[in-house]
Length: 228
Image 1: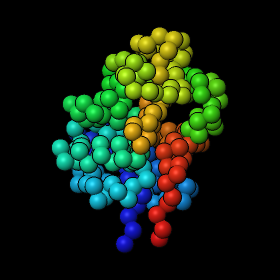
Image 2 (image 1 turned 60 degrees about the horizontal axis):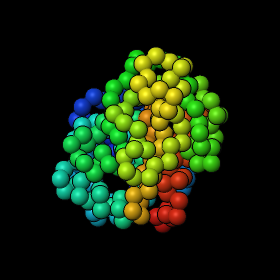
Image 3 (image 1 turned 180 degrees about the vertical axis):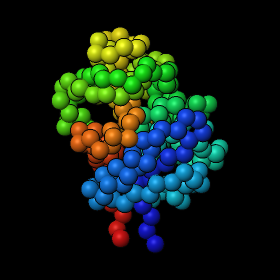
Image 4 (image 1 turned 30 degrees about the vertical axis):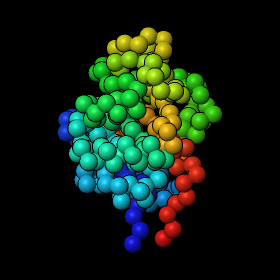
């Protein structure tokens, strides 16, 4: 019996986004486009060594609060350090607030947001598969997340791909340099975070789907789909 090689985890222990079902459905479709199978679950038991071993990538889709057991945390850290991949979407910035490793991986912590409103994303790096399909200035409506610090200052190398243009909306707290999308490597593993993805309709938008598809492409590079 084979297992899905994209594990989409949607458990919440805090605020729960209405967009989770739409996001999960989109990720299943995008995985299929890449020749992969996906499983959507809220079961913490999925974070077991034998289950993670078969995963090309784990997705935390707007997960909030403490969602993993101590054993799950240990297995997940070992998976990532050993060559696994993580895609963290939107409210996943507010997951596992008291797990130091996750904070170090993210490079910062969620620090609130203004009201949902139109704004603009400034794409700095169009060489990455996740941002290559996007315009340099991307007009967008979302929940514009603020963070406790710049992830570049976290001590781990981080590649910022896109920023918020704080002149285009109200309530930003970072000024001219407001990271929204970034990635990094962790030992032999890979990590990608996008702060975007609040509304259900987001996951039907062609540009946003291309953004997520590119993230999955980068995260799964070199990891062949599991044979049927």
